[in-house]
Amino acid sequence: MTAGLNDYLILSGLLFALGFFGVLLRKNTLAIFMCLELMLVASTLALVAFSRFNGTLDGDVFVFFILTVAAAEVAVGLAIIVALFRRRQTVQVEELNALKN
Amino acid sequence: MADFLFYIFAFFTVACAVGVVANRNAVNGAMCLMLCLMGVAGLFVLLDAYLLAALLVLVYAGAVVALFLFIVMLLDMQGGVKRPFKKVTAVASLASLGLMLVGVSMLGSRGHLATLPSPAAAAAPVGAVLKNYAELLFTTYLLPVQVIGFLLLIAMLGVIVLSKKFEGMEDIK
Image 1: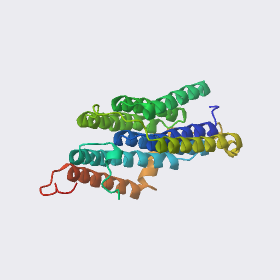
Image 2: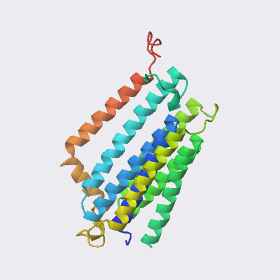
Image 3: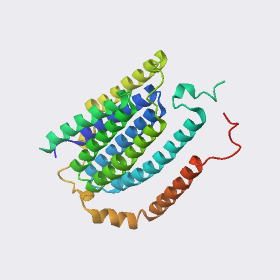
Image 4: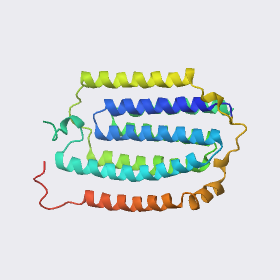
């Protein structure tokens, strides 16, 4: 195992940056949500790498909890998007301007 | 060999992440997300976290992406006009991407993390043994496990309430 902690952290930061870019750029709510998941996975990669290179298990257990919470979060978020679509007939963020002005 | 695999998985993961961000078709985006998660699972295997790799494939690449695909097909958003991005949105997101890339490259060029006291070869892979997880989850993290179980129950109830149709709520637009 020659790929060091720095390599994993750079990859994790790169994934996080790409996800953040997508969250800011995309207009479809579902695409934004997918990019959010990408950011979450990038952070778990950093946690697992830290845990492995320090020889502890706490980061791994934390990732275990993150996976569980992410599953619940995706279920609730998609239910909200479906409820929004039923009411407004759109999932484009530019048309969801009920709170504007 | 592990080094070679790391670079393959890293390239694969980043390429699929670009696919998630750049794909205009939501179904293709979800598929790219699934491939990206498979790449991350491969990286978890390289980091000796076999349980987490299996869980990532089962929970994320299985359940979550299937849920995404299900909702994409339910909402059927393929039609409609494709408007170009607003200029301010494109500039702001590109600027944020540039700033984050600068931060990551600073981590690569000036970070002192390579000099951590315990290099990988010395540290034993504690994450590879399933028994260690069980010990931690049933002793130190017993309360969080219970809380997470309760959270899943609450999420289930919340989803049921959200997807139920209520009478007399149609006036809220």
